[in-house]
Length: 119
Image (cartoon, rainbow, N blue to C red):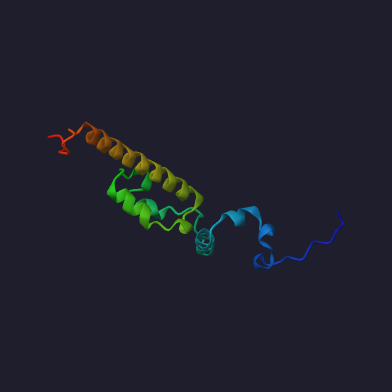
């Protein structure tokens, strides 16, 4: 109780296993975003992206969703945005799997002569 406080060390001087849990879990992009929000007096959550077009959670599976996921910088996402990213990637994967299953069923239904069935 009467122990003197330990001198504060900069985070860079600590060993990796001594980094506090919250900071260990955040990517440099998230830390940079949160710092800029703090300096600007803005809330920690990025709400401007909602006004810039269709959000990932509402984007229909297809080529546009695949493009957006491929171009997203994961290190810059907040935990909430990363959650929506993962859900959108799961929807895209399920959609692509449905396409694959349909193609396999058409392939298996083709006559043995190699020609595709007429549509």
